[in-house]
Length: 292
Length: 153
Image (cartoon, rainbow over all chains, first blue to last red; front, side, top):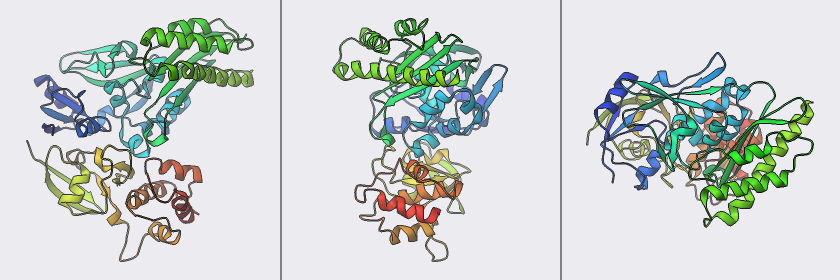
């Protein structure tokens, strides 16, 4: 049994005060990860003196457009993302990823902030959020800092967030014209589908059909979700009319193995990540051709 | 360990309870309130046996601490029957033989109820999505989906 005291507040300032007082306060919102860890007595759990419930802080639950960005509060649930038109219209790749998370019960409770801060290598929202160049605002009692999501993650289940900080906002720049996105995932049965492998792809296709500004981020493929610069470089500059998908798939596989080294899962993941890349590109190419 | 005083409503009745910091909504329902219709299966949010409706949404009561739900409305399987009359969903589960061992049934019914509260005419696909967090090892799901479809028509 893991023992802790329970704190709850509806005020952000109070939550920040609690976090400032002790390094052993662990934040809970939807609880869909941490309560499983507590039940399983996971070795990943840090020492906890208090569990701080932030699920009632209304000022952390919002989705809004500010100029050319969409801002999302960390308490927005996966269901909340799926049903919000600002997200559906601007970031369908995020909706696709949120739709594949767990089950209806988990999507109704789990939050985007929790998915980010838990930093699982299999977190479904991380690949699309990194591909969309999301930035995070981390708020402490005395200061606030902004950090790109791609530098927030440092290792499996590890981030740069300090014990006194709380993730208070996720900012995503709205993609300009001619951008295409796709999310691919292979899980087991859907309801408990912790991704076996996933991939988010964001790219721009210019009027001549040339790929630009491509971002490829796999999930469950590397110790923590990160982009694949060699694959992105290989896609950029190619034409949707004659890109060699086999060659791109091969580059993705090699790049993944370069990052992870040969592991027990490599014989499965190496060809499969190539398939996901090809599928995502194929879907985007078809969509671009119909838009011509 | 501290005790938390929390007020919320269960099946339309407001209650105030003292709960422990580790007490899950599932524990409170079954042990403090003796509402044992809600079942404990996997305890990690994968089987759906503990599904209840919290503020209009199907949730796993094994993944919520009772201390978190102050001011909320909880609706359990015991709240489905009204004045001695079964909810149409319950009757349909009987009529369509959608129950075998019965362990998953309360969770199935609450997931289905949550769906129908928001969408009274869901498609078969929507029904399947609403049940994607509920496991049944007996029926093969077909009768359950048919039972829900019969009420949704």
